[in-house]
Length: 64
Image (cartoon, rainbow, N blue to C red; front, side, top):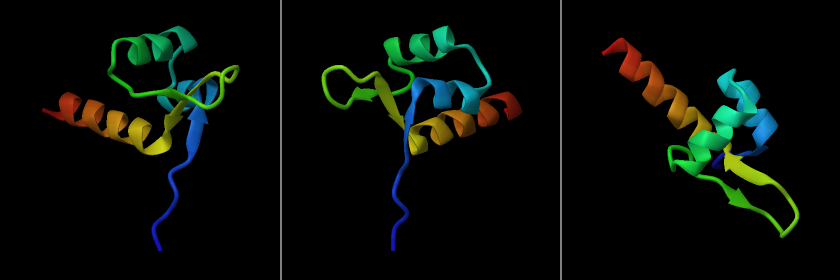
């Protein structure tokens, strides 16, 4: 059975990346990280797999 992808809010993404909320919003606004809204009043959400992929790409870039 396939594991479900968790949905993270901006604060959870910030904690995972160890950066500021402003930096998370910058990554989203520039299209580096894909985000979406659930409902009209809720904040932005990001798939956990998207965050993990971003981290892996950054680690690979630093190791190159």
